[in-house]
Length: 229
Length: 410
Image (cartoon, rainbow over all chains, first blue to last red; front, side, top):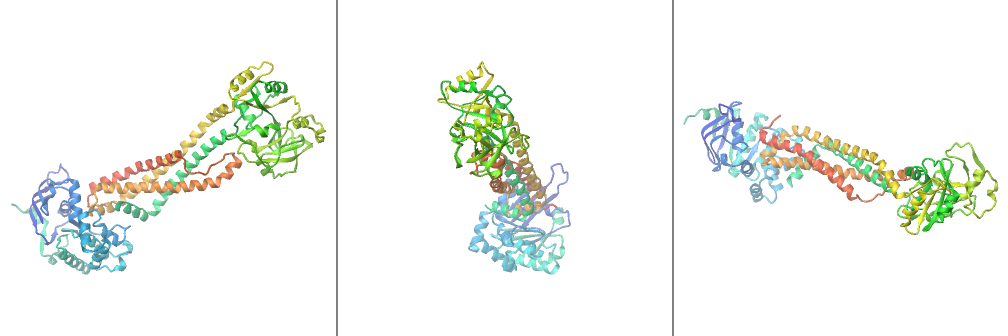
């Protein structure tokens, strides 16, 4: 699924020490990976590389057997919208769209994901409703203003948006940091259930190591960066 | 399509500031259109004041002064034309008709014109339209008066009323000709020209007023009489070909210093003198439009900084930088377009409210018609300017999305 070899990345070309160096990292298809590390360890940088926002300076970074390091800016944008669902820390939603419209937005910039969604349901709206239902947001909330939702509900909408059109990779960047402990576990369970259903790989980033126990694999960014081949 | 929907919903979400921006643009569009419409219509009303007249002849003075005093009743002619000269020119080859004009008297501030019945037959305005009567007929006796539409409306006169003409101009003339009352026998249709503000009496009656004679109540058949002099006269030829030659002859006429002008040419000269004013008006309205567009720029830029999160979210669902560029461009286009639309609405509202006032107070006939191609070009120019101004925040959104990527700033 993800195969990183001898990757190094600098934000600025003048930097002497690279922000991120990963000798080797392999994540298999369907894995639920917990990626942790203290603040400033390069978690966000790695996510921006995985999502194709930035490009490594050297080494290979393959997602779904495609080397993102060799793709143009345009193609990486297209790759992201076709294959990756992304969940932010919080305030994930566009305030001027309803929860339902926010979910549909997830596949509106990608033809393949629209087709995937339409295989599940007759219309995008129905698919969005189905996903919101599966993630535990009752239909009375689907057309409300986003501002009326609690943070936990907003994160479920964000998750539904990441899952619509069944992308192969779901990246979650500290999605539970604003949730209390009970909600946190419940939210992660929902993510797992949904990811298993469609067979998506889940990369979950957090500095909260208490969550580690829930995942079948845990990667410390600090550890892999110090790895020597 | 999704971008248009996003732009629309996003604007709706910020409807407070968006509406204000839109309203500013609407006001500026209304202002520009109104000023241009009034300017164009004022110009045509102005050049419509007199038509069908080939020459205006008066005592030697400036071209424009003669035009102003004889047609617009503005200012005084210092000298007149002697009756002999008038009779002489009248006999010239090619002369079809002449209308003697004698000005200088007034009634409650409105100009009184002594003339012949030919006036109602040959005087034309706009596109060679003759004068027409809304009520009554031309004067047939020395003590009868025909009123311009506005005189009748303003002073509340109707057929059969008796009015008194005073000597000299102005409301407060000392010397009232109380002993020479006139009967209203006709009221003209509105023309949008100074004719509306004029009282027309027989030329011979002017002489009677001035001589202080009390014979006006006797029935006279000769309405023209033989006054010593008249203020000016209008000439129409059988063919316009005579115009230049007769004009030269009059200007070189030995017995008396006379001036003949072609009204069309002089009207144009007069308007040229006013172009500086119209240019300043146009300049002001263009500046107002620019200011309103800068207002939009400020609002969009100020909002953009608060919307970097929104841009990052859109990036995360696969929007490319140029999608975001387009999104902001659509927003600015939408604001400008709706602003122009609302502005046109306000413009028609204003015009329909102002027509009556402009017609009666400034003599400008406003045509409430579809937007002319010139006005559409103006609106197109505003839209283009709005689009170009909108490129600034759009470009900024483009670069924000490149530099921020999906990391959420702020």
